[in-house]
Image (cartoon, rainbow, N blue to C red):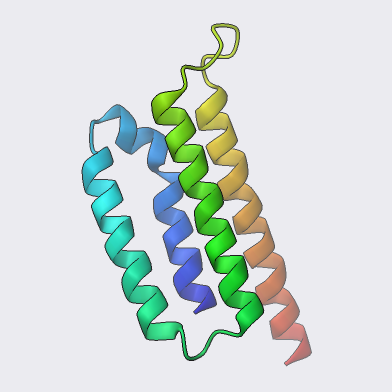
Length: 107
């Protein structure tokens, strides 16, 4: 389930490029399908805490996407939203990297 969640973040990291190429509808449909299938397939294997973290991560991502679509960035910072998206994705990548290294050492 953790690997599946990490796969979803690779798609989220591509959001600025997909938005620029007018592929946001395809992205939303694909990610919606991916998240639905992931949650259905792995819900029995997820602890309550893991499921909550997964949902919190998705809500944060959706919030960033909606803000980028509907709120114009300040003229002083035209690349604010792609930067926030990159930081959000990089943070997830770093956490997964640390988690998997920890699991590799402990197990």
